[in-house]
Image (cartoon, rainbow, N blue to C red; front, side, top):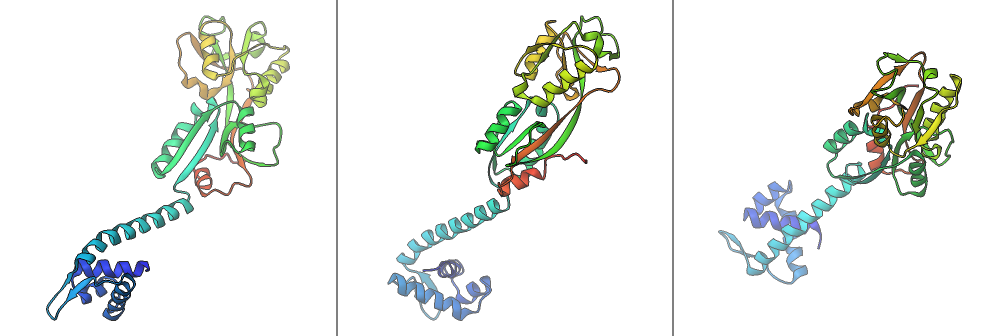
Length: 293
């Protein structure tokens, strides 16, 4: 029994006319009649009562019609699902991201991709750059949005998505809070809130290097999450150098000020396993912004 037999049977049963059924299937009547005969022979029963004036379904034909419709519909659905998956429009994707991405391009990226590909199951995991890299290599993540790494990973591909200028997040009560631009060297006596280096070596190194270039080694206090750092700044515990996109976090007691002179810049990008040829991943990458080199 083949699908062509079932399609011919459904057409004849619904049209109750071999000629109209053949026209609906873009066939001539003889192949349709042959398909019905082959189906009846295989099942060992008559599906239609025929006379010179009309045809009608037998009880066996009525029962088969329900099953045939279900089989054809399920087959078409399977074909559609397979085609959709092959084109990258379904499946699942596990994305790791740093908090900086949520303050910049990530929300719009997810909105656009999900709107265009609603059948893709997206799983989001916020973490640090070092953990994202580990999970990518282990296969626990499909894609990572993170700070650029100073260490190359031969198994991963990477593309830069954004560069952010570092700005000073100051307690509103800070002596320099009213200045439009802050001289970094004037912050030498303050506590600096920052990730630990293993969480994001690029960000850590940029902040420390900027301070050293201005004549001092910062007194560092570590926190794991960006919003925690901003909360500590609002309490007056210390200050921080943060990517300028973090300014979307408006909290009472915190002001953001640009640095005087040339400010350090951090890069955020997307990384994925080089040998991952998933159509879903390839489709997602079409939505990831890319910086021109």
